[in-house]
Image (cartoon, rainbow, N blue to C red):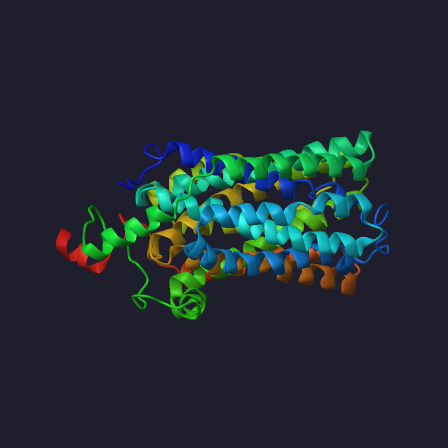
Length: 433
């Protein structure tokens, strides 16, 4: 079989992947508005304990990070489709745990399963897209993927805010979540194309020298690296990989803040569940929708400077948030933050895909996503502790904004441009000269 790369050439599997990541986003989005806002009244969290509130995000981040790492390597052994299906099976108990939870501990455990689901399913939609697209389309593919996923997050957050306002919160989350999981699992079993052969064919072409156009600066490493060698390469041995990994980790501070701290902060300021749903939804919609152009933008102007710009926009939006006082003002800050996330998020993934060799790209993306989603746990724990120690919810915003600014400086100093057209491999530069 001829495994030709390209979005148009592989439109059906590309659309199958978009459908899956939309469902994955909805599965996490159902927890974005209602659960943090009702942590005290519905699930018995001690009043004012932000560390306890953030515990469900900490458990999610640790497990999702680990499952990203596991799923990336596992998918190179058993295939992308099988790992995707396992991820949806892991999600099946979550709606029942939310419905029957006698205390907050059940929500923390449910988020362990959510971490498995996200680590397996979202990772596979990203990896599968990198398998089937051309190097010149990685930004576009990442942008479309994250648009679909975070569009699902935002839509689910908004819908569950309305449902919980007019119906029983637990029943509405149960029905919504179970429907999403069953439809997604059915689609994964019936209509998801296995893409691992594309990756293997690309690696074989590269090994045989059957390539054209600017050649990527694949990170230097062993021909057949072990899992430990790939982990070390992405985590600290390669400066650009390391810069991308730290930026991915720190940007999850922002999403942890919007998930856990912002709803609690807005409740303390007198906002309703519907207002909270709109504010967090605007963040998600701007983040998701803008990736339709920020991803392709990085295919034109490169990966580095859109990422750096996005990091500093997030920093500014987060730092402004606690100084504002109306739903309109908070919505504007949320939109600015969402735009920053849209600039950096798909571009980081595309940059990883640029310099990770196709024979171990899935594992490299898994390591990157391990560090990225571990940022949920690190950021949530730090925000919870600092809010409890200082007695100020605003301290979490200051911590996140400062961390993002420092991460942006690290990117400026440590990241090379990865786009093969703008910074090709040295032998290609010599040929062009």
